[in-house]
Structure formats: structure tokens, C-alpha cells
Length: 260
Length: 268
Image (tube, rainbow over all chains, first blue to last red):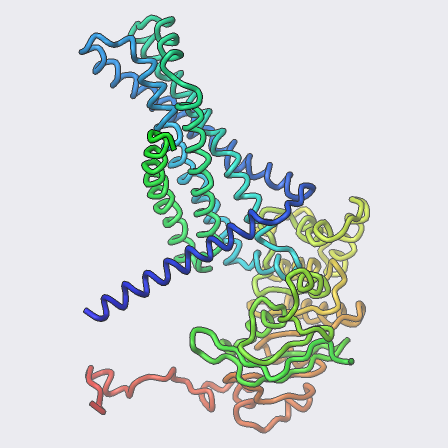
């Protein structure tokens, strides 16, 4: 019994220590004066690696999710004679919830895990240590561009996801199931509020983006420099990110519905 | 002062295990100083302590007359520009080619023109005999070539001090001979101060000016290669002659064999 209590206490202290280290890392990256001449090109490279290269999975997933929501929604709405409301249903589901959440989950799996593995491997192969000895701070050279790159990419990927998902719903609802195109778009336009629905969704994506990328870089930076350590860190990135996204989504939704 | 690095009464422990217990080492300017000892004695740790990547529990390390562990981050990074380090694996950046690896410190710390960087990188690569490999990626290099590229990168900023972490381990005889020659030549030609951490006895004795032998957290022997070669102390002899058993036991500390086999503690 005492051993279990001790193990629980140790786990608690370790977790807090890990959180503290991750917080210090975030603070050191965010609170420094940026060097635009060097930092901007590096950040843009990361926007390409984390954002542009994630486009395919985001577009394909967005398209299919939009199509599935339209298909499911149409048959349910049709039972109540409200099939014309398919546009609002899809648009609200996607902009408020599915867009930010699914994009963040995909981003954690595609870009977050890659960042953790990359930084972890750089640590294991003494690249970070060499950099430090060359008087180059790895936090500024490696971690910072990846963090800002992910922070910039996430909202943009969410917007792409939203647009593609709504287009997928249009293809199913209008082109396949024969809804009136004008009604589809007009109903959507009247029901969707830019601030309450679209902007709040983007705010969610910004928060998710920051959390996912923070988890990814800190897991990579703190990874044990062995193959097992990097595997564990990569798994942790996906698991912690997914849980954080879903938990934060609830908190943010509650705050947004409650009018902050 | 004639010593570039002075380690005074150094104590360091990790995870409750004492690595160094009162170590004193002087590294004179312009010389090749070797630190030898069996694996796991903390040789790499010592280099990390000199580079201030780790902090000692007690004692101080002076580099160029400055206590490196009391410096601000800015001052530490300024001092590190005068230091080069060759990691055990080379630590080359795998996403850029050989040329860019050597150019990295120049691009980070200088405002030199592209033409100047080009010339400097080629000069450094020529010194290590790898000018022809400038377009190769690190994954295309052999182990020995990787270390030579890392060496070219470590001397890119013309440092005062260069530290080699196990430069000869895992090298074939030709690569080893090349590295031995390079370390000595570069030290003398550039007026550097070199610190070599190694357990390769023959190679290290052939190039070092002064040698420290460390074991069990303490210095067990020191002197010129000739003095070390004639050292009588049992612990030093075991290391130099590669004897499987001696003061450093063959067996890792364990319970008595019989009690382990029987699954009971004999003293219970």
C-alpha cells in the first residue's frame, strides 16, 4: 500500500517537473526578442514542412468528412422535411467543431509526431549538443522555428479543412442528392455567424495549434536519447495532444457558448 | 597565465553516483592534453563540464581565466565561440550537406559574404582532405570521414581550444592514422590547445604532450607519454596493458554467486 502511495507521489512529482520544464522551454522561446533576419526564413521552412506538407491529408480528410456529414445529415433532416437545412447543419458542425478538432488531431499525428521524432533524433545523434558547443542555442535555431511554424500553420489548415468539407457537403447535397443549390448556400449564409461560428472556430484552432506544437517540441527536446526513448516521446506527443485537444475543446466550447 | 583550462577540485555526481571526487587538471596552451580512462569513468562528462553543458557539484573550471559556470548565457556563448568540440558521433546535421555543415558556424556567427564563406569552407575541408566531398550528405560519409568533416566544422571559427571526444573509437587503422595526424597537425599549425578524451592507448600516447588517467572519479596517474608508459601503479598498468582482471574487477559488483543461484541471501 505504502509503495503504491509512494509510486503515485513520484508520478505526480515527475509529471509536474515535466510540465515545469515544458513551461520553461515555451517561455524561453516565446519571451525572447526574435531575430527576424535568421528566424523568418527558418520559420517559413517549417510552415512548409508542417503546413504545406500536411495539406494533402487535411484536404482528403476534409472532403470525406464533409461528404459523410452531408449524407448522414440529409437522411435525418429529410425525415422531418427539413432537408433544405443541410447547408447550415454542415457549416455549423464543421466551422464550430469538426474543422478545428479534426484538423488538430490530424496535425498532431502528421506534423507533431514528426517534430518530436526529428528533435529527439537530433538530440540522440548529438546534433543539439554540437550546436550548443558552437554557441548556437538549439532553442532558437531548432525549437523556435518549429513552434512558430506550427502556430502559423494550424489556423490556415483549419480554414482549408472547413472550405473543403463544406465543398464536400455541397457535392453530396446538391450534386448527388439534388438539393437546390441556391437554398443550400442561402440557408447557410443566414445561419452562420462570422464571429460566433467561424471566428470562434479559428480561435479554437489557434489554441489547439499552440498546445499541439508545444507538446511536440517539448516531448522531442526532453526525450531520452535512445530509440526506445524517442518512440515513447513520439507516442506521448500523439496521446497527450489528442487528449489535450478534446479536453480543451470542451472547455473552449463551454466558454464560447457561455459568452466567455 | 599559461593554462587555457584549469579544473580545480572538481566534484560531480549524477543520479546519486559520484563521477568525479576532487579532480585537478591543468591544460596548458598550445599543447595536446589527453584524458584517458576506462569506459564509464566520466571522460565525456568532463568535456561537457568544461563546455558548461553540465554544472559541477563542487569546485570550479576556469577557461581562459573565466569561471565558465558563473558566466551569463551571453558571456558563455561568447566564450564557446572560442571552443570547438568533436562529439563521439560527429554530430553532423543530417539534413544539410558537408559544405553547409562546415559553413554553419560561419553563417551563424559572422556577416561574411558568400564568396568569403565559400573560400573559408574549402580551406577547412582541404585541411582535413575532404574538399572533394563537399556536396555529399552526412549519410553518404564513412565514420572516419564524418569525424573529419566534424573536425573541419569545429575549427571553422578558428577556436583557441578544441576538445575531441573519443576521436579514434570504432575507426579502421587508416582512418585512425589520418585522425592522429590531423589532430597533431591542426594543433601545431593553428596554435590550438587540444584536449583528447580517449581509451585508445597507442594512438593517444603517440600524439599527447601530457596525459591524465582517470578511474573511479580520481586521477590515478599523470605525466608525459614516456612517464605514463613506465608507470608502475597497478591500476594504470591494468588500463594501459589491457588486462582483463586487476584493480578494476572483471565482475560487476554483485551478491555472492551461490546465493544468487540458490535464490536466497546467505547472510539472511
